[in-house]
Length: 228
Image 1 (cartoon, rainbow, N blue to C red):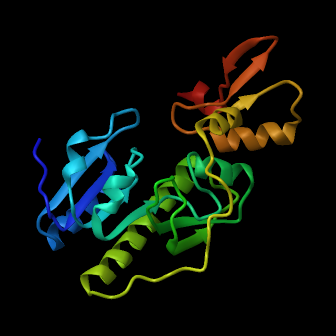
Image 2: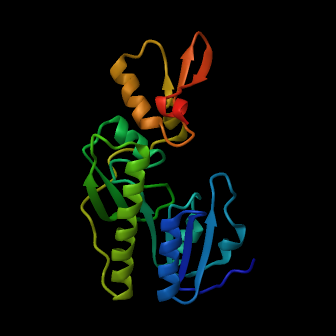
């Protein structure tokens, strides 16, 4: 597939995500042309994009780590929209926020850097976390606020306004896949409170925590599973 050089915007997003589709529709209504690639976890980075150069590189729930050369090819800015506040960089952010029983959460817009979730923060949009929240509800609300943040930032670009500079900074190294997998493990020595927190943080759709007993691993079942 050919790549449009000097296209104002290159958009990288998540295939099948409704919010991502709305963000891309907005860009196509307001910028011409827009080069876009949508992908899923595990898919290789589109090699044809290495020849792209233009004004803005926008990453929105993208599953790829963007090469440094491509970030530099954006003449105006390379921007990422991250579904978490700066306190939760990396993967599994919603899960770790629920496990730590955070009282607020949010979405972050930041400049892209060669290393994931390390670029300067542009803006953060926060909202409360409720005791009734689980991964599904918190993630859904996060995506809603992230889309609002996207409209606000892109609106400033369309109006040729300077992008804001937040005083906020990333507070830790990014969470890893290994840490997320470990969060979903339950062992017999854990007390009831620890188990409760892990079940809340690691239950989402078909995903459930695993229970390790005497070297055997079982997937935890809930009352909801039995009813279905």
